[in-house]
Length: 276
Ligand SMILES: [Fe+2]
Ligand SMILES: [Fe+2]
Image 1 (spheres, helix red, strand yellow):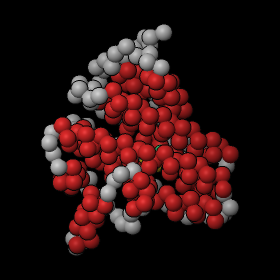
Image 2 (image 1 turned 120 degrees about the horizontal axis):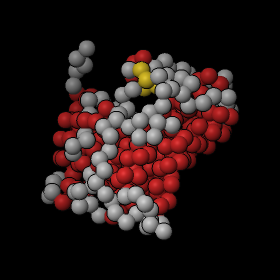
Image 3 (image 1 turned 90 degrees about the vertical axis):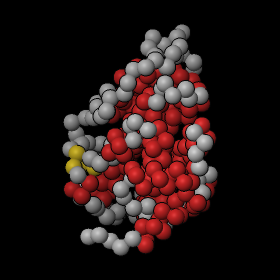
Image 4 (image 1 turned 90 degrees about the horizontal axis):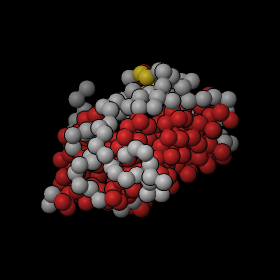
């Protein structure tokens, strides 16, 4: 039976859902409907500039979020899992936004299938971490969270190539670099269940970087742009953090993301003297 709404109107309804569990389940339902060919049309409903969020967690500037060490006690592990759950919730919004905002640019059906697949993974990741937090006696919303994660989405909302350069190929690629050390720490403090959750996430995230790279290359091809030079230009223009080594070169390579992209920019940062 065909879906009553268009793909874009269904996505916008999910983006405008504030409750994170409802958002994750709504997203999974959209992806299942897409895979069952239940949408007759993409539609042209524009996504909101800022997706709906729950009242809790309180959002703080990045430097205002307290850091805690991962120890055998649960407080540090809860803080880590909470911070990652927050990233996953943002990642649901980012993937949904990607599958909706650029309708009209005559992208192939695979583009939507890929980003909806990412949105489905991010929803699973959020729910997995929520379950793990519940097992530790906590819940998403209990702690303050980082308010800076939507900035990159906002800065690139008018430019698909810039969005592809930053969201998957800077931010998600960074996850590949830092997650293995977290898995190791969680294992070392005797929390194999949290380590296993992060292991699932890590495997899926390699796929997300690969999807980002696939579509970055595709859009460069449409415009006859050099992918490496274009990525350097866009990252310099839109990303104001550092590309911090050490990189997880093996995981990045598994995503077909070669060091020809990120190597030169990391060197540039090493060469530039700190300004403060
Ligand atoms: Fe994720
Ligand atoms: Fe991801």
